[in-house]
Image (cartoon, rainbow, N blue to C red; front, side):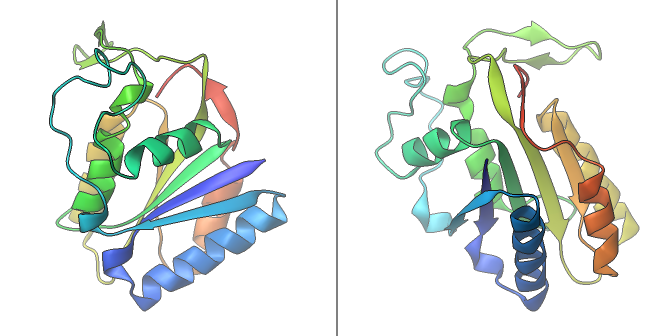
Length: 186
């Protein structure tokens, strides 16, 4: 089993390091092989909205940067865990870019959700389970809730956790989650 950790390298705080170590230890105990991708904003170009990933090269971004490899690694993983600082109640711009650039893994059509919003349908039968863990020092309750709400709106099947002391709370929350491939929702 493979777990891919994707993190924002521009926020390498002690809290981040503690979280990364905790997640690594947790995954190893669960029998996962861990692949790590630490990114900076300059590592990836932002999505152009050109739809080349749907028209010119279906399933693959046409921008020649590391995102094609990241998308392949995501789809070949059993679980993907994003480690993101919480910035004004949202994930970092680097993590947002990675999530946006995952567009080739979806089809270019629209489905209507029960709440009336739209979403692209899945391209594949299964996807890795996805978890995003927000972290930071002195995060307000409002920012924590905003982080959860915004993240849940972006993905139907993503689990959202907030890393906080004591560390056992995060491990307890992770133990309640099913890690592994999930059927066709992203």
